[in-house]
Structure formats: structure tokens, C-alpha cells
Length: 81
Image 1 (cartoon, helix red, strand yellow):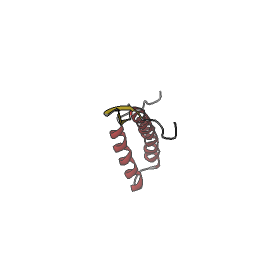
Image 2 (spheres, one colour):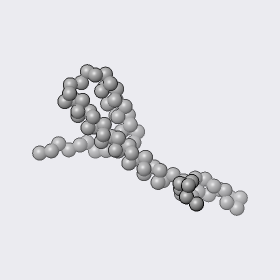
Image 3 (cartoon, one colour):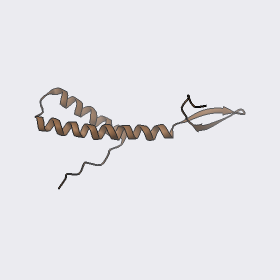
Image 4 (spheres, helix red, strand yellow):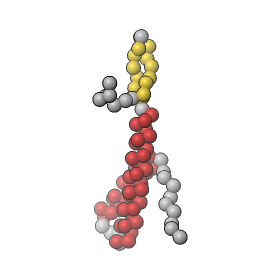
């Protein structure tokens, strides 16, 4: 039976856990098996962070002034016109 991965944490928690994994791996005191598990978890966290960033990017809005009043509109790629 395959072991399930822990649920995806929020962006900040995922980033903090990823930083701890990197520090642990850079310390060089893990066994090969522990390093492989850390690497696998790091990949999962990286994907969770990337997904979180994509979702945040989609929600970002910019504040603009139209007819003397401030309003928001979805942020789009500045290359699009």
C-alpha cells in the first residue's frame, strides 16, 4: 500500500518547511534514504508553492483611477493590449 503524502500546506507554511528541508540537506548529516525522502517532500512543497503563486497571480488586481474615482480591475500581462 502506497503511503499518502501529507495535505498541501498554505503557501507560507510550505515555504517555511521547504527552507527547513534545504537547511537539513545542506547540513549533510542525513542518510541517503532520509535525503531522498527530504528531496521528494521538497518537490511536493515546491509544486504547492508554485500553485499558490499561480492562484495569487490570478487574484491580483490593480488600483486605477477612472473619471476621478478609484476602482480595481484584474491585473493582466502588460504585454497584452
